[in-house]
Length: 83
Length: 385
Figure 1 (tube, chains in turn orange, yellow):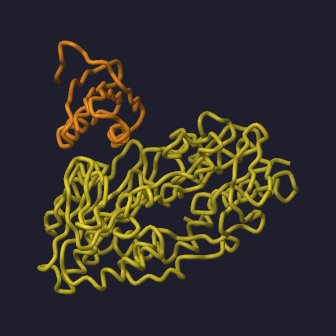
Figure 2 (spheres, one colour; figure 1 turned 60 degrees about the vertical axis):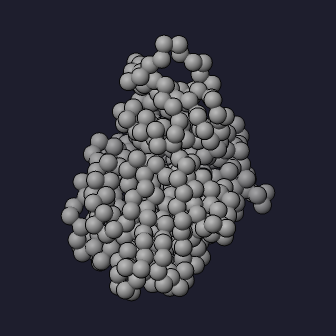
Figure 3 (tube, rainbow over the protein chains, first blue to last red; figure 1 turned 180 degrees about the vertical axis):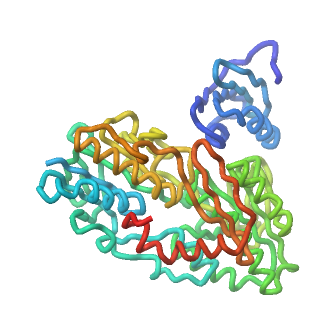
């Protein structure tokens, strides 16, 4: 889990709650394709695999993981599009 | 008169129609109920056979039958392309001007491939999602004398999730048989962090990929194809050179579902209740098969197991009672055979609560798939299995 002291403004929220693996990752990938470098994206996922799968993908794809937070019944994963 | 309109004459639509006749025969004979199936071409195509045109000597003409021949005589077949569904008027308009009124609507409209979503796909990439594309892939394999084969998935979700792995395994076997294996490299690209979406199947397939010397590339989401350099590029920043490129094309739901406000853009998948198969909370609109947004295989098998639930629910609504019995709710059942190569296969059988536990690959499951494919016309659409 990582956290920054000053939370950046979210550019776009992807509410993938209720969607199952690989749905949340695929929805994030679609959003990344439509976003600009520097955009901050938050993914809400109730699929337990997302909090490991999405950070692994973010690392592979060269983006920046800002935070992974457990919320009520779901995880919020925040990333920055870097390239 | 209660009117049931079923859009789509594939596995799901045809089976649902025939099962509804069995449930409502007396009412149909009295003229109290009518069932119409709307199909774009009037030809029923057994799509799982396409892979065997590329890999197993199958012929396109064996994979088609007139839809009329598969439907009970009491089902009206309307051949035409749907333009729009008007929910307020409870009507379906076809492009030829025909208008059908419904009380119960079943959307069995499948999925469609959109290779044009990726530039140069048509010129550079082979696939096996139409009979013609599969035939071209067969010709390309016949002409292949060694080199680098890249097999990947250019969009999720897509039809028949095991198919790209099956093709990788079958091509690897074929190359060994043709003494081309030591002159060839095989690469398999998965958009996610493992070889297959379902973890237990991935755990089964990953060692087989390794054993067969097929290199696995995870998190490879196809972004572009560069025909000049013969490379496929991923969103993640990787590129892979190819001599023969085989990609599952991107898939979407039908455009008219988006135009009619039934399914959201850009995917066009119908928001479907996982148990009742009702669409978006509507009381009289059902979806099954590839058309849904359910987290299940887009495969004939899924439609096959969903159709009895749709039939039970629609029949119950017509009779004014609650759905009952073993088909009152859909529990996510899917069953399909999975080719491993060298005349062997395994079986994927699962539901929402039970992930698949594929048995040890063996000849019986490969033969099971061949027999199922050959006997399909006499069994599945008519509700005999």
